Structures are given as structure tokens and as C-alpha cells.
Image (cartoon, rainbow, N blue to C red; front, side, top):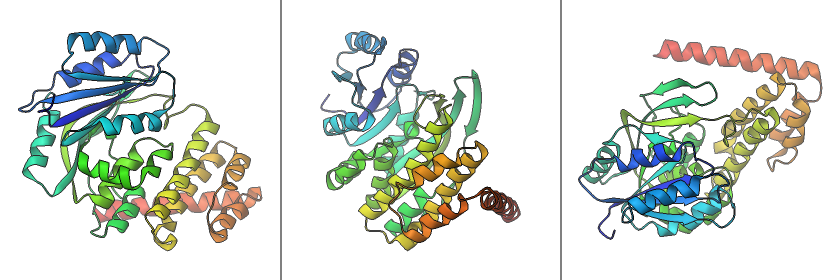
Length: 334
């Protein structure tokens, strides 16, 4: 496998229903170059490992497995997997997502080879709503006015100043940039928020250009018990509150002044506030907020807002009107 130029890193855990489709979508790729598959299984309790071993027997020179002896979680697994990647390019793929375009990586690597100033390529996707067994959003358009300043670029990215958040399963990266960021800031893989923080921070700080290919290459499964989609409202609020907290750590890690990113945290906390208000768990929002290490002005704003029902109601109405005005402005602008 020494002549491979791309590694497809598949992250699996209890994916027995999906892993065959995931692996088949990769193995069916038509390319002008050689690539390999590095697949991790985080001590699944179902038949995921057994299915992976079947594929290893059939493709012994294509698939490299990493079987964890105990369940350690996504980011510790990435810490094991990343040093094993020795190819020029890297693609990530969730063990429950799959590729539907057999030329996906050919297109992405072709573009990166022809454009040395591009660090990161991603594509369109289709969502599959697992619980309802129906298709969701089709995403085939992406826009982002990327700031030239790298720190401002990271702030803009983590504020989601684009049409949609790039799905890791659609992306292809230059491995050297991921490696550089991981070696310089290993703390990024300790944030327990998924692989995206390392990947996107790497590209914003050390990368040069992003490129979007509008082709639909990937199916992204929306599952009710995944990290970012949960039917338990308290767990969902925990996720919403944890995400901006991790952003603060990242901004501080890259020495970004709080004044530059405060609006990002306001936006996230406003979203969490509206969710908690709508689901009648403001007390839980208040409790989670107390663990935030942010300036007193920002924290006190939300402590005041949640101190009584009237203030909460007024602020909720204000946010709704603000959202409507922004939507009207966006429609008018376009």
C-alpha cells in the first residue's frame, strides 16, 4: 500500500445495519490512483467487528483495521488513527454514512492535484432521516465569503457564516495540514465534540483555500441517538451548551481576542435559550450556564433573562423579531 495517495478513514461503532453500505460505497470508487481504507471499530457490542473482518478477508490488501479492545469514544480513537495515516490526502467517513457517487474521491483528488493552493474540498449531500425512513434535505449549494485573515476566518467559520456546515463525510483534506495542526494543538482532540473541530480549525488556520463541488456524492444519516441529534431534550440542550463552550476554548487556544468572537457565543447561547424556553427547561439552561468560563457581562445577561418569566418572554419575543428581520433582509438582498 506504499503507493497509495489517499486514505479513507472510516469511524465505526455499533453500525452493523450500515457498515456494509459504507464499505461498498468506498470500494466501488473508480479512481486513477490507489487508495486504502483505515477502519476503526470502537469495541462495538453488535456484529460490526465481524462484518469488518469479512471485508478484510475479501480485501486484505485494501483495508487496515483498528479494533479497540474497549470503548474509548470518538476523539481518543482519532488519536490512535491519525498517526497511522501516511498518504497525501485523507477522507473521513462515518460508519453510518455512505457515498453514492463512484467518482467522488477522483473528483476531489483531481481538483486538489490541479490546485496546490486549495487545502480542502467538500461536496453536496442528501440527508436520510432514519427514524422516519424518508429523504430529508438535499444540499447542492454552498457559499462563504472567506476572510483572508486566518483568525477572522476561524471566527467566521465557527459562526457558520455560510449556507450550511460542511459534513465531514463529504470532505477531502491535505493530510499534512491535519498533521501539523494535530501536532501543534493536540488539545483539539480533547474537546469531545466530534472530529469537526480539529478538521475545520486546521483548514482555517493552516489551510489556504476551500473548494466546493456541488455534486451529490454522500448520504448523511440523521439518527435520533447520534451526537448532534437526540430525542432527549436535556441531552440536546447539553449538546447545544457544550458546543459554544468548546468554541471558546478553541478561540483562546489560537489567541483570538474575546471581542472578535463574542457575537459567536451570543448566537449559540441565544439558540440554546430559545430551545430551553420552548421546552420549558430554563432552569436546566441556567444550571449549564453557571459552568461557563466567560466574562461576567455576557453571563449576567442570560442570568438576568432567565431570572423571571417576564424577562424570558420579552427576550424570546425580541429574538423572534430579530430573526424575522434578518430573513427579510436576506430575501431582499438576494
